[in-house]
Length: 265
Image (cartoon, rainbow, N blue to C red; front, side, top):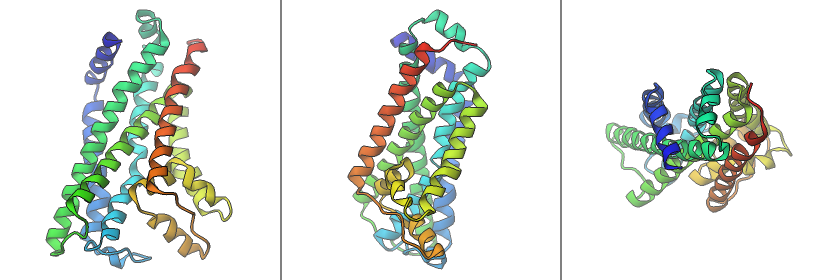
């Protein structure tokens, strides 16, 4: 197993994925946080709480959940690239135990997802503090609570990376896998969030669980206000964390079990 893990790290380091991972993490963390922080959140429609309130800080950082499809895409592309370039067959010949190979991939990219999340959180924190300093306001969240919120964002990055790896391992075809990830996060989840009666399901999906974990339901509330309908219900932060962990475990089990019986093409 150690040999497989080292092999995955070596394969990863030999590609451009490390560079793209860092660039995407830094860009994702600073983009939304910087835009919302430097421009007055209270001027948004509907208005957001100001940075001088704990709710305002949670909303600004919670909006980073909108870009968590990025680590999922990175994980998906990393796995499907082996199928695309037909190197997965060589990998399975060298290490015939497919379960062990896929377990190593999940472990390595789960760690990569945590690194991605930490970079995103650190960049978001810098952007947030920079925006507060420029605007001359004090952040309305204690340092310990801010660190906890950033740690939750980092953990969510790891979960989404694992989900992306699982989708890639299950779909095998890169275009199909990327289409599934983008279609789900850009179409299906937003659709489920806005349809009255059906939007109760959203709270138990990855996006709703992440919003609960980050303590921010601004997006769901804003959509409900715009459509003059009831907002999608939210779950507690603890249940959100449990749901995300469950999704990661289910995705990992499926990614290991399903490809075992698949013939390589």
